[in-house]
Image (cartoon, rainbow, N blue to C red):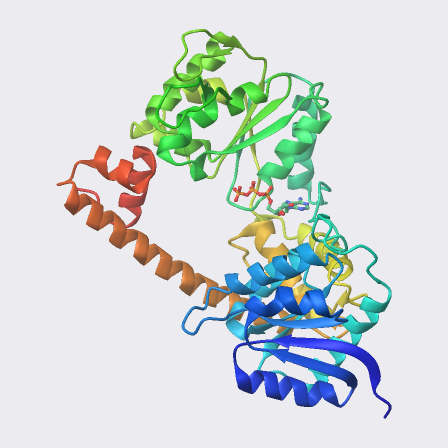
Length: 457
Ligand SMILES: Nc1ncnc2c1ncn2[C@@H]1O[C@H](COP(=O)(O)OP(=O)(O)OP(=O)(O)O)[C@@H](O)[C@H]1O
């Protein structure tokens, strides 16, 4: 067989992998370079134009974060935005490989690989490189030019329960009523909040999302309300808070149940007086916002145990919409599954795929504790992993295996968090304000976590 006149580079600090891949690829391509040290990438890229680079995800021995691979991928693509890169990954790191594809990698192969699969992957990516001849290197172009946008704003659902939710959302969208969206994680609350904004008279204004659960205690107040220069040590200039930046539009407070009590008082005052007072200022600023809140917690229960203010609850829940979990509307599963299938086959440049009958039965029977988000990820993984034109039940059992591995990882993270809380409690002799401060979380979040880990007094 005549060799293809192409340049391939393999980067991996494992000499065995370099040799194994080189032996296979040398049979097909005229030039195959190998490099054990990713630091040399910049030099190599200056001297050569590669059709395809195979890049390992992990480097320094013992470090398995995969972030090194992502780092080098970004370095390569900032120098050569069109460079075709195939990630080399371990089975357990597939989630990271998916992340790499979101950041612009063309494909990935899993170690230990099947030689035919390696050849096929490199050949497809090589062909792609021919249609993407680079003309201007080293330009600051956005990454992921070829990636299709993340599943966007389209709302899918044909069940009566879900249609009712959307009908209510559209009906109240045109009013300025505050809306509270209730429902389990991943049911689509944020998607619906954005839909309400688009359907409202404020659609020309901003949609500003604040993930209350993710804000650290120290940043919370200035993030929401803004601050004046000098209000605290790091406040080097005036900063507009998120509430003010939603002026004329919609403010979406996700995980509102995590708002610490002192800030609940401040939020209530913003809603009553329609003005914010930035930190370090005594001059109120008028704000005109529509508030949409979301939570997966039972706020009435939180009121009962003194963690959420009743007066605030009645301010934010003028209209309450409960988004049902996916397991109670299984009629939506095939439509959603096909929707995600189309998105991901396009995104990962796979041939058109269909869902086989056994897969559909399996998907409809599964209870989806992570709701639509879990279904979306299951389809994404199955599309990436399968080389066949239709997806079968087995392709999803594989996803379930990866899910379990991720859950184990999450369990380890929980264990680390639990230990960190115990250590901080001991260090501060049980002073929970100090503990919360040290851990960078609000007191409400700390109490919640302590209850979760059985650490309450
Ligand atoms: N009906 C739907 N049609 C299409 N995509 C959906 C639908 N519902 C949810 N999704 C997708 O599922 C994912 C999770 O949705 P979203 O973030 O809106 O859920 P959520 O309830 O706000 O989750 P959380 O409580 O964890 O913040 C998103 O990628 C969203 O696009």
